[in-house]
Image (cartoon, rainbow, N blue to C red; front, top):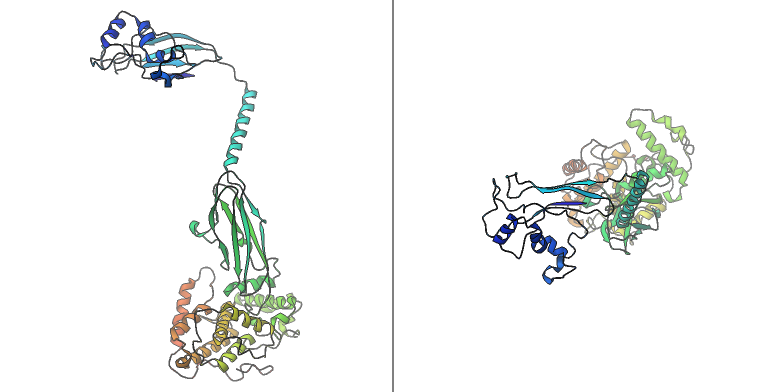
Length: 523
């Protein structure tokens, strides 16, 4: 090892004039042995001095060739005369030291070049003869691999390490419409350093963390060593999500509620990723059914065989897709064994086509008979418990039964109607997607006008009613279409023009006999 440069060692405990006299007489040894800082430090082990004790180990094991040249500092620039400053005593500041434990090292020359006049220092050079050992490549590679392995071990020791309990699959079990389900996982820090983590796509990092019908708490945190973080996952199928889940359930997807892209990703900052796979099975309900199915069911959904309901939903979607692309929808009839061609020979669970879903008819009939003048009928506050009870009645009781009057408030029935409309996969506005959708839109606007005609008693405000209807009637548009917010604004404008807050007869009543004659559904 070589250590060289301006090491700034000075001559001490001597006057400048005496230094110059000894230098001129070539008495370098006396100056170096008794006044050079480097040599004074090296003598401390033989003769300790308190003021020098902290330098005792300086350059221990290093050697220096005997100096036989004048001090290299400080000269006048451009000449060979020492600087006239009295405070600058000539010194051997510029040195070449070397450490050679096992390799022979012979000094050929150690000298100062006085001819160089560009600086106040004179260059010092040392020429050495060193025997270079031949490298044992095999041993070198072995040592190299050991060092790399050691570095990997050290790096791995400081990497964040966590364990996910109970595992990567998260099951919500069987889930039903509008209910809230909760489960959880635990992230345990098993490493040697604190860990920061976050869900991929959480608000702080941009993007979507999870499906819109799920909630994660928390989405990021810090976990100390030997500590853990509990993460709560909750699920509530509402709105448009129930229609998509019903469609996947009809296609017999093994995980109908979640799509493959709904995998949750837990990211350890500076570490690995964990993948959480949410799973849930669906309890079918009358909410989220296509109108083509809802208008033909002969029995409540809860009394249908799952395979029959699946077949009907599959056929409705396939025929709808074919019609939208200009294909012949009848070609899909033979694909569904439990539903005969075009429903020509009706299975036991289907009826002749009705113009409206019986669930909607039951809700609107009940509101018209009992709640048109009920005070505070329209509200932004959702009574989840009563909506769940009314949804259960619509799904499980006979389609012609009257809904109970006492146990569920009129405003909850109205909210249930709005929820049903919001869950429909069919488009009603800006343009009805089918004659069935047009029938349903007429009936809903008819009811809205009747509510406004009795606004002096029920307190229904026109603007609030239009806003709520616009929200539930607006459906997500295909990619490339106008944004949902713009579509909802157009629907709101349409409703504001159609509905009047002045008392008058409804303008949207269905034609006489439109409800069919085989099984009439009186309104």
